[in-house]
Every structure is written in structure tokens, then in C-alpha cells.
Length: 198
Length: 198
DNA sequence: TGCGCTTTGGACTACTCAGTCCTAGTTTCC
DNA sequence: GGAAACTAGGACTGAGTAGTCCAAAGCGCA
Image 1 (cartoon, rainbow over the protein chains, first blue to last red):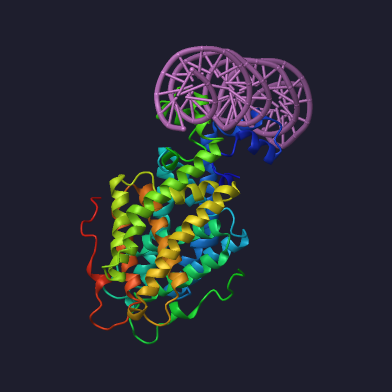
Image 2: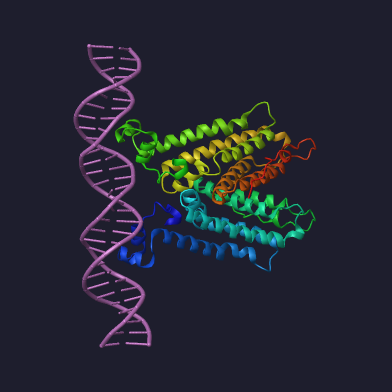
């Protein structure tokens, strides 16, 4: 509920009704405040994202750049599953609370940082295939920002084709960092296939 | 206030206090509802953005790709002005209301569409300098999504260097769409210069 | 049997929210 | 002069908000 409707717009009573609890006392038996619930939700969202998304970045048997491509596909797939609604739980909370609530801000910052560090170490692993001047810090931020922005635009336009198109361009951009050895074509090869129906 | 704190988090009473009005009646003399105020705010934000941002895309005396680079610089500068706080008024409202409030959703969609169409026509103008396979629709969406995502990440990390770095990469990506004629270096040349202090 | 955790259910506080209604004085402009 | 628009100020409704408090069950386990 928080991921879809936002933190402020989700009342404790809504949560209680949604979870079919008996009343306030039941809720406050487990959470000291709504804030604490929000933190816990953010934690669990990140855990889920770690399992279903970031895990791909660490697959040891697959070529790192291929993994990165698969990860981008996974982000697209996750969004398709939800029908393009809801968007990114991190991006949503960030937009809502980054300026207003320092507690959330630092936690969301940590989420992005852990995400970025996963990409950085993948990039480090792929370094023999990449140009020497590739800035892993900058590129990892670029990838995250573009994906977050893409998910947001997709939600506004209600068109999953937006996300798919941006994913293709993002892969292409990553491909420009790859040495032109001839053998490496991982990035440009695997598009996500189906285009959204307009 | 709405751009900074969000629509839901900004109460009508806050607005009245901020504008030093005498009371509710004064406010409701001009706006039928809070919703209508929100629409008007969105309109004005877009007008301001049109004047101070999108105008650059239409400058007739400057090379189109150079204009695009300058526009990206302007987005960065606008964010620097605000100290990285507040983020994009469109992105914020989008994240907050895209799923919950159809009236805002369509209006924000229209904003992004008008923005994208400006970039598309610039790309059309620059077409002699670009590769034949450049997809203007997709590229325009990519640029907007990346900028929106970058502004959001910058706000979370409280580091303007994030936005500046992404802006550089974005220009570089646009540069990969340019024909290698030798003369065209507009994109890679003008970085925004200063790096943020970490 | 008895202790402690969990569940149930509701009453209650103090506050904020958008929006309405009413009255009265002040500009502005035709 | 007079109508219409604007400013001022406050009382009020009805609904929702986070959070507290209390009392009585149900529960598992030693």
C-alpha cells in the first residue's frame, strides 16, 4: 500500500483494515509508530529487490556484461508484472520524503548506494572488456537514474513500451563503453523482444 | 510549497498562511478547490520551465545539438540554484499522484509530452548531423527519463555532483548518435565544468 | 497450573484536513 | 452613485489523523 499510494496517503487504519487486524492495539503491539512500519516496509522492499533483481548481477557463471543486460530486463519484467502501476518503491518514497523526512532520506540513500555498489563491482569485474576511461561510479549512477526515471515516465504515460524503449537505449549506451574487440556483442544483441501495445 | 513538500503534504491552511491571506474565504474566492490550485501550480511551473528551459531548445541562431547540450546545462543550473532540494516539480507530482489521481496524471503526461515534442523537433532539425537510425521518439524519452531520474537521485544523495556527472554521460550518449564527420564535436566538448564537492 | 506473549475490541484524546457559511468593510470601474 | 469584485475574519461541519489506554480473552510452553 505504501509503495503504491505513498507513505502519507496510507493511514495506519488502512493498514489495519488491509491486514485484517482487530484494532490499533494489535498494530502498535508490533510497531512503535507508523514511521517504524515505513522503515520496515522499505527494508523488505529492498530485500525483495535484492533477491529478484540484484541477485542477477552476482550470478557467477554468466558474463558480467550479459548479467547487466539481464538485470535491466529483470527491472522491465518486474514493472510489466505490476502492469506499469506502482512504479519504483524507492523512487516513490524518495520523491515524497527526501526533503521532508531525514530518516527516510538516509535509508533510501543507503538503498541506492548498495544498488550502485553492486553495479560498480560488476563493472570492475568486466573491466578487461571495457574502455580504460570508464568511470564506474558515474556509470552506475547513470544506470540507476535512467531506470528510475524510466519507471516513473512509464507510470505517467501508462505505456510499458516507454520503459522497454529506454531499456534498449540504456543497453546501447553501456555498449559504447565496451572495447571494440569484435567478440563482445552482449549488449547490443539481447533486446527485451516484445514491444508494448500502444 | 507543493513542489517542495508535495501536494498531499501541503494543506490549504499552509497556503493561506504562506500567502498571508485573511482566511479560507479569501482562498476559496479564487480557487474552487485545492485540486484546482494544484492544476494551476502545475501550469505555472510548466510555464516557467518553458521560459527558462525549453526556450533554449528553440533558439534559432545556435546549432541544434549545441542547444541540446545547453539545455541539459540549464537543467543542471536550475537544480544548482535550488541547492539540489525540491527536485523536479513534474517528477514529484508524478510519483505522488500518477496512480492515485487521474486528473493530475493526464496533466503531467501532457507536460512530458510537450517537453518530448520539443526535443523531437530539435532532433528532426539536427537530422543531417545524426545517424539515419536515430529514433527521435525513443531518444527524447530517454533524455527526459534520465534527467528526471538524475534530479531525484541528486535530491536523495544531497550531492549536485551526481546530476553533473549524469549530465556529462547523457551528452556523451547523445554524441554517439552523431555522424562521425569530424566537424561535429558539439556534444563531447562542453562539459558543465565544475565538479561538486563531495 | 501458571506465566508471558498475542489477539480482540473498543473508547478516547488532541489534532488536522477540505470545504461551507455568514457578515461586513473596501476597492475598482462603468 | 452603484454594482461587482475583492479583502477581512471567524465560526463551523464532518471526516480523518496518529497514537494511548484499558480490559478481557486466547495461546503455547515449561
